[in-house]
Length: 401
Image 1 (tube, helix red, strand yellow):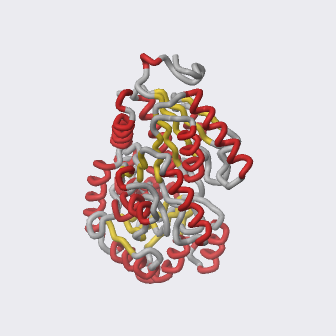
Image 2 (cartoon, rainbow, N blue to C red):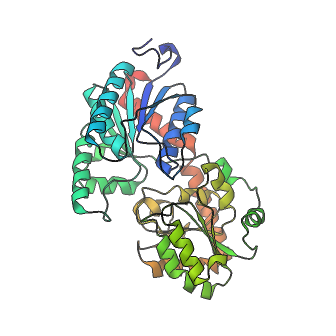
Image 3 (cartoon, rainbow, N blue to C red):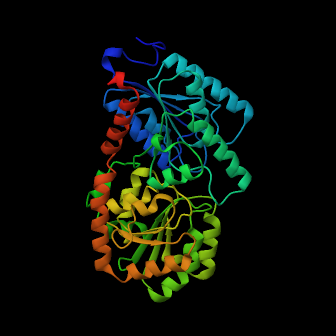
């Protein structure tokens, strides 16, 4: 047995001991990615431990899923999302002690806060390999320069503690290197995967889901899957909805997600008389997403920043054409003219024109949807992601093959 016998299995039954660290387990793409990775590595015989901080907030929780994944789940109250010097120092000390006890072959961090503290603590504990996944960069054009400069400095520092940095899209690598974060040889693109089976199955029928949601069967449904919060682009959709409804009276908007803007959006729809053309589902568990996508004709993703939104490959796997702002990794799934249409980020009139173009072109929607499904079946199955991550680990720790 290794040090910390309460946390590990017998050496002859495992390949590697891997510690994953993430700030919190809300319902989100980075968190789903992390759980799929832990589940897949555990199924391959590795000893997997997942450490997280307290999970709170309106986004929902993936803790119940993590508790049934077969691997060890640990929680520390000190790994908080917001900066807090005392708690941050305690989290650093906890992770450093855990690494010395567990002696992991790999420490793999996710999310910005856990990525900084976890990498520095793991390096200080002498861990042989430290990996970080960039699901989305913490610095971006939509926040104050002082905050950006602070994050860039921290990311540069933590990159020096890392043996490898995984990005969920090539765009993340380019942006990180442009900011002086890391070296080119550290980076590896591994797309953030998912269980593809629920998205490619034909049931339930679109008409069934629409009836359940109260959407008339003749509507052309523009679906959006995102939290109702800043930088997700819902205001841009409201800005062009009038033009779209004038040109395509049967248009309908299905918004999946919840957030701080919901009450304001609902009030605006009532004031404009559009409530009958909008459906808001509120917060739904991830398992409901495949069913809700079946009610859609087109996936519209107007986010201003996103590593690579899971909604794009999820919709493509379901056979939908995509419309997206050209932000971050969107263009690696929404291929212009092939799997969908891209608009310059923030250009609401261009977004409107793309929506009108596909609303009146059912054959083009079908061909784009098929192309998107073919692309994503190759890139996004969970087994593909886990195999690539495992291969990277073995490159970093060759004696643990």
